[in-house]
Image (cartoon, rainbow, N blue to C red; front, side, top):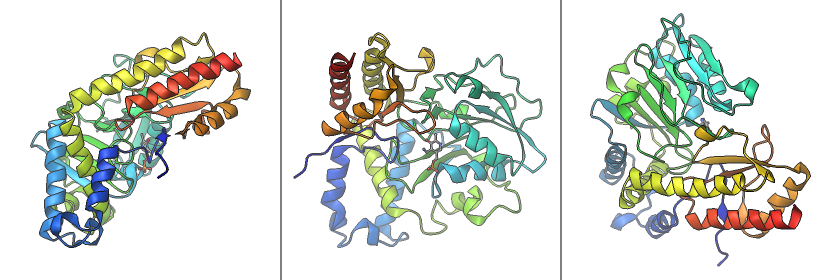
Length: 362
Ligand code: PMP
C-alpha cells in the first residue's frame, strides 16, 4: 500500500493513525451492532452511547465544570459567528471584538448584523503579528461580551493567556487550538471550535457554554442556531453529524490515553520549539513574522528570504511526502500546521528538509 504522507494542512488536517485504524476496523460492523455508525439511528441506544461517551471524555479532558453545557453542532465555526450574538445579545447591545487575525475579523463582521459590535483592538496594520497587552484594551463600558480568536490559523498568532472581560463574559474561538493544551474553561462564557483541525473531521462544531447564557436568543434566531433547543435536546434536536461525532469520540479517547492535555501540550511545545528554532537559527533564510512570545504552537507561518524559492520548496517537500506546506494566499510563504496528530517525526523530517534545502540554496 501507498505509505501515508506527513500532512501539514491547516484543516481538514491530519488525524491520529491509531484512530483511523480503529475507525477502519469498526467501519463495517460497529461493535457487533451489525451496521456501521453511519447507518445507525441517532436515537438508538448504540449512537446514544457514542455521543454520551464523547461528551464525558471531552468533559474529562478539559475538566469542564458542570455549569457548562457541551453541544455538538453543525455549520462550522462560521455559523457560530452569527449564533453567538443571536443567542446572547439584542440588536442594540454593544459587544467588543479583539481582532488578531482574519478569523477574528470574520467573526466581528458577522456579529455586526445582529448587534452593535465594535473592534476594540486590531492587529491589521501590523499584519496580524501580535496580541495586544490586556491592560491597554479599551473595553466598551457596557459591552455584553468580549470575543477573541484564541489561535489565528492563518497568521499563527496565539493567546498564551486570556484577558478579563469587564462584565465577565469572554468568548473564544478555539477552532485551531482546541484540546491542544489545558484550558481553564471557567474563564469563558463560550468556547467554540470546528472539529476539523485537532479533534476530528469537518462537519462537527463543538460549543462549550455556561448554562445561564442559554435561553435568551433573539426572536429571529433560526431554530438550528438556538442553543436552548440544542441543549434541551442533548444535541439531538435534529439529525446530528453522527459519524463525525463518533470520530471526535475516538480522538478524545486517544487524547485521554496519551495522559490528557498536559501531556499533549508537552508534545506540542516540543514540536513547535523544534520548528521555530530551525527558523530562528537559519540566519534569515527562513523568517517567521510573528512576535516571539505569541507564536502559535499549532500553525507556523514562515517566509523565505528569497521568495522566488518558495514554489520549489513546496514542490521538493511534496516529493518527500510532506504536503500542504503552502501558506494561505493572504499571507504567502509557507505554513506548517502541526496539530496534536502531527507526529514528532513529521516535524523532525520537515526541519531536516529545511536545513538541507537551505544548504543547497543559500
Ligand atoms: N475560526 C478559525 C480560527 C478557523 O481556523 C476556521 C477555519 N479555518 C474557522 C473559524 C472557520 O471554521 P469553519 O470552516 O468550520 O466554519
